[in-house]
Picture 1 (tube, rainbow, N blue to C red):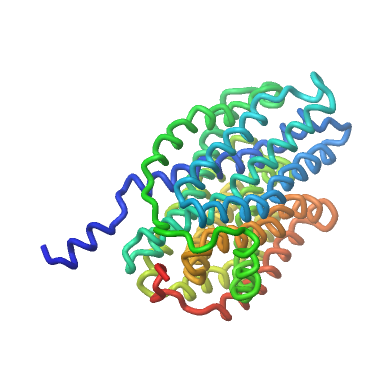
Picture 2: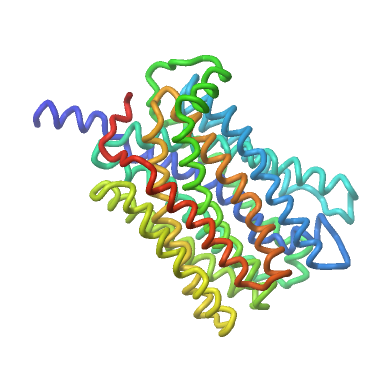
Length: 426
């Protein structure tokens, strides 16, 4: 074996390192996503109202609260990762998600403890938001910094693919729970089961993450204020473009997550049918995120970000028009799969391009800030906006909202540099 081959094998990250990043990320997104799947029942437990629509909006508003602590998590944990290392930051995010999930799973209903119940739930969602806001930056940085140069996009694509795994597993757990419990049981205690499943798996994620390699050799900065100042001045253009790109990804990802609530509340489908769509959507995101990574390594990041986004912009309104007209389970399944696979492809390639635009000394902080702000402003408000638009203007208004934000994202993609050949060690 040649010296070059030995070096490549030495630098190649072990499979367990990728598994650690993916497992922790998937677990944290599972906890975050499962809330939206059971928003109808959570609303009734913690936000009782004579109007089911008001209870749902209250639950979705609290779902959004988790997004609004993401920027803080992005800044604090991202900066921590650039000062203390990727591994330490990724251990911290799992610990935080444990606290948030425990708060949701163990809090008694409003009926039992009154106003304390929604207050605890809001705090739990804020903690979950802190964890997710700080997760993506360190995990993305570790994946691209430990990958061979010609496989960076594929390694980074596991970041988005793990979200697909989270959606798929959440859908499977939701389907099993919905299939074996009555509506009354789901509303009173059954919705807590998916959160308890997560708590049982958290020790495994912590154990695996302890084996992560450290890819930050020597910190350059030790002051959070200095790091943020540089990011928002010297790399201001990269931050703005990154936020615009992730805007559409965050919104369409929430469309996929919202399909369960949409199928139950708007189309009046059985919850079990809605969960099947969730499972299929998660599978599509998983498979096509990895495909996007392979293609981005071969053809570059921009084209793989661009064309799936263009396709989604053109197809979203006709797809929802067909869904509303037919109210067909098959159409619901196909629409969900199409949305998630296109979102997965565009999102996976963007989660390698954005870190590649940042220097290694500021990468975790920069990516965390871009991701947290983009997802907070648009992903955090998406489900609440969807519910409001549908109630006031009909289903197609949600589709037009997605199409409009996609246009802005396409403009940002066209303005981004191609980062396929950059040196991520600089």
